[in-house]
Length: 203
Length: 247
Image 1 (cartoon, rainbow over the protein chains, first blue to last red):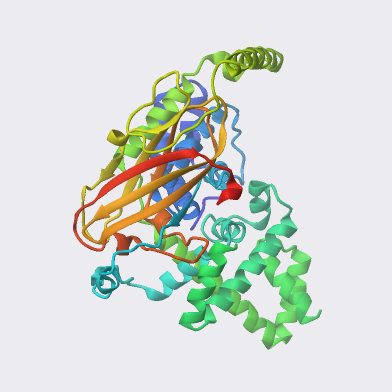
Image 2 (cartoon, helix red, strand yellow):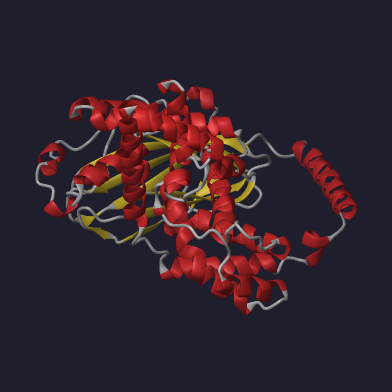
């Protein structure tokens, strides 16, 4: 995703208005950035409900900190929001809020129903879907750096600062993630499926 | 420069971490090494594909209007907190915290002699009595939209669990039973906390959650559970807090 390297004039004006006490700037800033944050949260959390929750938490934190926010050249407002968002998501993920254990009692007719899935469920771009599946099959540590690098457009240094880990660790995680993705995308279909399941269970 | 060193520099190049001098050294190596040039092109191609896949997967995603309204309300409500909470001197905040902790400790000490250890079992279908330590789920508040599920639709089931226990707990078992045209399914949801001692906790059951592989590799997809159009009903049972090791 293309990310601005600095705060735009409109955003700067809204931030200054908010810092001077203009509460109308709150809604304007939220409308301007809510989908940026929501999309990142969705990629990290992988479901709409958690993404909505994390978007809310991100903006609550952001507006509490915004009076002390300093506009600087080279650091965009999006990057600042992304940093808050990713830390809110990590915090939620660390809580391991719930795990699900299905009880093995599916109805017998289910297998037959699966054969008649409608065509609209078939992805238009299988290759793209395959890459996304491979990224989602990574463990959280590696998946997060991949999202920040390739979606948010963060440099290794920015990822390190956001996740509060050494820059060398970022480099190593990205390297490992790339190797796994490369291997996964080159594997035959059956091996790939098994690998995805095993990665998810034991990241 | 060896190809191994060049590989590390390619990593740094892609991570915007290459100095001008290293950039120059890498360029010199690449101009004489077709293998590393090929490696660079492969990595650039993989990066481009990852960027495209990630961006395309969410570029049409938008926060729902009601969620957007909720977001604005939540931000405005958080900013209307008393000024002392956000601006008071650190010393004042520490003293206030210490006073609150002392009062809470005293309260717990007094309560611990009168209130039995929490023990919850069976199905709870309403709010528990105010003085009885319990976890409960209000069946009437379980929301499920749309009620008539069409194959492939997205959904979220929101389960509110109310607690008036004396201390926060690590794990709660909550059984979810889904009945519909495709049959009956039962899920054991182990919620790992901390679950707050008092107040409302919300569990959001989504297709992604139900499709998550279990420890024994048994996996159901939402398409399996909601494979036919029709009305589906949900029943939730909350059990006693359990320790994580009992899973």
